[in-house]
Length: 127
Image 1 (tube, one colour):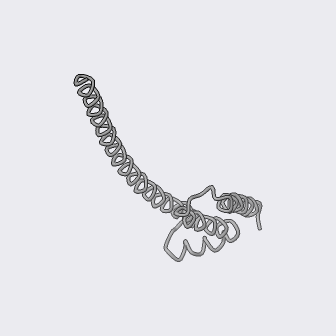
Image 2 (cartoon, rainbow, N blue to C red):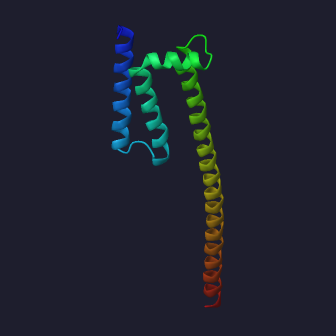
Image 3 (cartoon, rainbow, N blue to C red):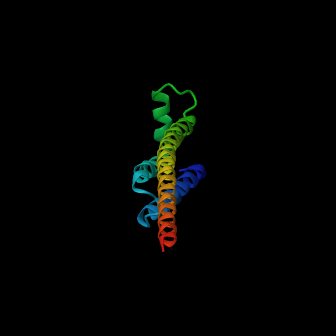
């Protein structure tokens, strides 16, 4: 293995260890674990077996095989960002609904307070 291969393998092992550590410490949500485990295997594969990536690139007709991991990473990032945007949109919708419900509850509470105050005023005027 060349120096480049050793560096790539060490970086892949390091980032794989960090991701596995975060998964074990439950710093990543359950819905995100699949993507990160997929990233771990991709990093390990690319770092430990770079020659296989070259062969796979030639099989798919990529004239410069080292661009294959970059292309795969861009596709992975696109899917990851798309799923993050979908989740964020769901959260925004939930937040908007909760805010509307909260405003409704506050208006109802204010109406009940005013009714109670009006009742007390009516009782005080009768006495």
